[in-house]
Length: 411
Image (tube, rainbow, N blue to C red; front, top):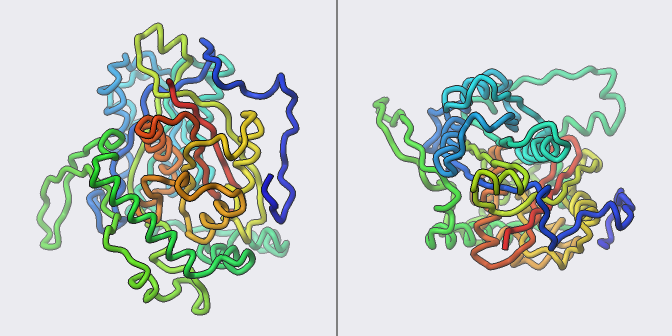
C-alpha cells in the first residue's frame, strides 16, 4: 500500500463482502451506453453560446438514438452539476428529448465528482431494487454559470482552521500540494506536455469519435453574426505544446509558485450521459453491454491539500473490489492540476502509461459536473482498443475529498 502522510480509511471487508470479478451475474450493474459531447473552451469555444440544458439534451437524445431503448423504460435520471441550480432545467431537457413525464429527474452536487456521483447514485438505486433502468449524467456550462456564482459563509464557522481552508482557491491548494510533497514546476510542466501530446495523438487517430456526440449549435461570431456550427471535437488540445512554451508562463496564483495556466485543467463546457441497468435487464431488451460498474469510494482529506484525494479514494475502491493497483489496466485520474495528478500517480506507484492514455483535463478540459461521467465515456472505448479489462476513474474534490470507481469491461 502507498506510503501516504495520512491514514487511509480502508474498510477491512471480509471475503464475502468483496465485489467478485471474472464471474458474470444477472444481477451485475452494467453500462449499456456512455457518451459525451466534445469539451470546448469556456467563453471562447463552440459551446460558448449554448446553455447547460441544451448540452444535456443532446447527450440524452444521443443515448436514446444510439441504443434504441424505449424512453418509457428509463425510470430515473440523475445529473451532476456544480455551477447552477439545474433541477428544473434537467427535467425540462429530459422531457424535450422524449422521456415521459413518469421518468423522474434529480440533480446532485459533490463538487468535481458530481458526474461520477450521479452514475454511482443510479447504480446504487438499481442495485437496491428501487429502479431497473436509469441514466447518470453530468453537465456544465462554465461559460454561462461559473463566473456568476456568489458564495457567502458564516464568519463564526471560518474561525476553525480546516473550515477556513475550505474557502481556499483551488489554485492555492495546488500550490500547497506542490510545496508540501515536493512536486517541482518541471514535473508539472512535463506532465502537462504529455497530456496534450497524448490527447493530440488520440484525436488525430480518431480515438475520441466513438465517445463524442456531434452537436449542432448556434454561435455568435466576433462580428455579432449568428451562425450554425457542428461541435464534434475537443478544442483545448494543443499538439504543439512544449516544455519551453510552458516554462515561460507566469504562476497564476502565487508569484513564487509553480501552478500556471499551462499545467492546470481548462475551464470548459460539456455534457456526458451513462445508461445503466442490470445484466438481466440488458439481456431482456437485447441491449449491448460495454462493461459493468464494480464499486466506488468517497473519502475525505485535508481541505488545504484537496488535490491528494485520488491517492486516498483509489486504494479504498480497490480494496472493496479485491484488487491492487497493479491489477488495473487504465486509470482515468482527473487532472485538476498537474501538481496533484503527478503526486497521486507517484505515491500510488501507477505506471505513467496507465494514467490518462488519451490525455486528461489539462488538454481536454474540466467542465466540473460533467467530468465524472465524461471519464467513463472515455474509459470504455480505450479499454476495448487496448484489449484490457479493468479501469478506474478518480478525481479530487473541492473542500477536501476524493472519489474513485472501478469498472470492468465486458469480454
